[in-house]
Amino acid sequence: MGELINLVLAGLVGLVIGGVFMYVSLRKKSPNQSVKAVEQQLHQYQQDVEAHFAKTADLIDNLTHSYQEVFEHLSDSAENLLTEEQIKNQLQNRKSREVTIKYLKSSEPTEDPTAST
Image 1 (cartoon, rainbow, N blue to C red):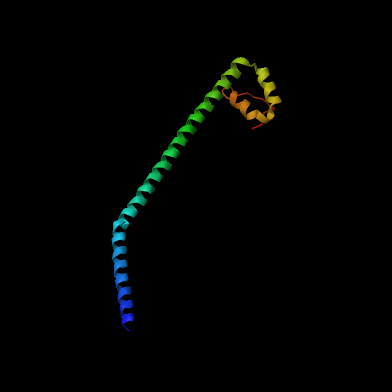
Image 2: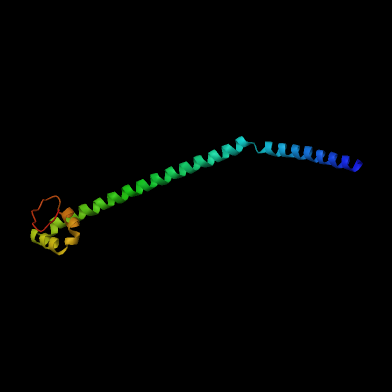
């Protein structure tokens, strides 16, 4: 019977020591610090996503501007370098690219009966 009491006392002492150890270890890592760390990581992630999309929008704006410059250059070149007859021939030869040719000549409306809308 003495052994049983010693075993129960040892178990209780082990439980108390384990409980104290867990309490101290959990207090060192308070849940508030853990939540704050996660909130900070989330905030950093949100800033990274915002910066990514801002940069993407800037790059798309630059790309759009570059395309506009190319189309303006092509339009000016078509007006300066091609005659009306050459433009009509191009429209007939490139019906699948008709929109591009039309865009190049959009500053002067043409009445081409072969052109479709």
